[in-house]
Amino acid sequence: MDISIDPNSTGLPGIAQLRTIVGAGMTIGLVLSVLALIVSAVVWGFGSNSANPHLAGRGKVGVLVACGAAIICGASVTLINFFWDVGQGI
Image 1 (tube, helix red, strand yellow):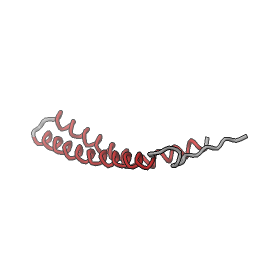
Image 2: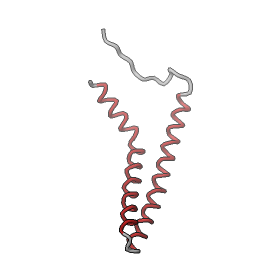
Image 3: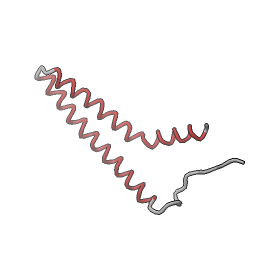
Image 4: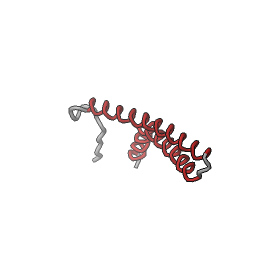
């Protein structure tokens, strides 16, 4: 006897609204990542031009974190689908 359960979009009320909310959250995450990238690049530039290695280092870390956050926000659906498929193969 095999059990086969697949996700459906009609099981609960409000699924369409939840998808809209998640999409809006992804948009907010991407916009905040761009803002963080701009601010971090400015901090990096000020640190480099004022011979302040601590400030420049913080700016570099901020740029990397902002880029990482944008990658995760943009690839979140693909990552979830990938791991869903991996889980279905077990």
